[in-house]
Length: 88
Image (cartoon, rainbow, N blue to C red):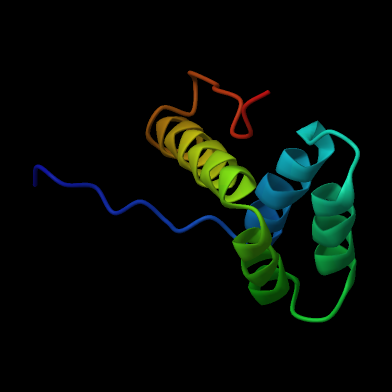
């Protein structure tokens, strides 16, 4: 077959993508909002909801997530070729 099923990243990995993104944000209201989202109930939903407060941060998040997922797929397909899953 020409296709390979790539397993979806685990919830833990998804949480790590969000946490690494928040770590890179400058101190300020959005960083506090996202930290609180990660530490509260339903962190995935709350994190996403908080992104609506700042379109620029939301766009940065989606770019960060895209790069993290590209790294994840490369690592999945080529275990000997390691790429950092959460970009710096």
